[in-house]
Image (cartoon, one colour):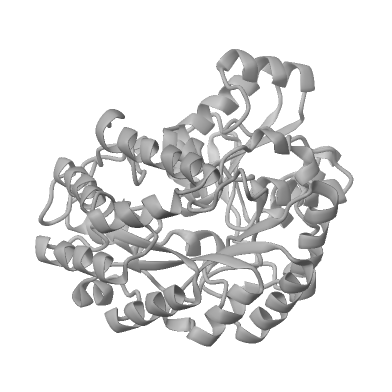
Length: 461
């Protein structure tokens, strides 16, 4: 893990939600988070031998799927007979292929995990067959069985609140939301909805959660806020929904409740579903920051990736956010469509400067399994190999190219865009003004060092 990631490690809410569900069914879950806990083969083997679990699982993102397999291999050596499972978007996109590629996995939980994981734990405890477990791909001797996908949970309010008591919250030191100083904001994350109705070609979220958006009620979300305040002492909340403002009436209810509790919060949303009035309401209720997926300044690329927004909507949203005094983040993508040209990227740089976000991220688009981008690039012969560890936005030279740029060129373009944005005199002066306090100097000094390390010191492979 690089310096940038270590500075913003989030609570593993996905694992804590799974743990809460299996605990409610009478099991005794334990959560290990090796993002913050000491990690080595010796440590993993010793902890597994001491615990003697009957069922163990890892979250498998594409870039860390090999590491997940290695960890479960160590555990299976230390605890003969333990049943090992992988969940997450990689296995959900490639359930049969994942089991055939990694013998360390006994099964894959496909899609949303709470109900499948809980049923799996019950069946194993009772010694029952796994046949008919919807949402599961499993190994039956030399045969791989892929069961039908489980129906998504329609009423998210039936799920118990994430089991935050199962992790050492003191280990999470960084600011999980860039731009907000962790020394001033004791923060945690909340997922108040699942799914996104958009159809962007690069997004892997729909592999797990589908395109239908499902909302928790405002009352259920605020109950989680209350628990986090009274039981764990949190006063800031990062709303991790893909599109937090999608339902205005629910947003109003949430804003009212958050304002009454006197907490601060931040969120992600889309430029085409916010208004100045909405952003002002959010600011008045304690919202400190809003992040928008811009992706590109090129109208052609926005259309090709099916973002369903236009440049004028982007400009209006950022102008309104600046007017009401919110911190803004803009997410851009390099190579979001394989036909992207230097002119398209230059349009993105011009837009970055015009909308002037407080923070900006420019990620190299990754052709994740299950996405339309992966299908397009495979058909065009642009993916050289499936080196899963390279399927990351940073810290690696891609094992793919676009029609106009090779792997090294994509990295060079990314670094050049970062330098052109962050080292502008305007941005430096604006940031210097924010740093004119003890806390500000600490936060922005730390952030600047991380950017310098990323751009000039830490290598890629």
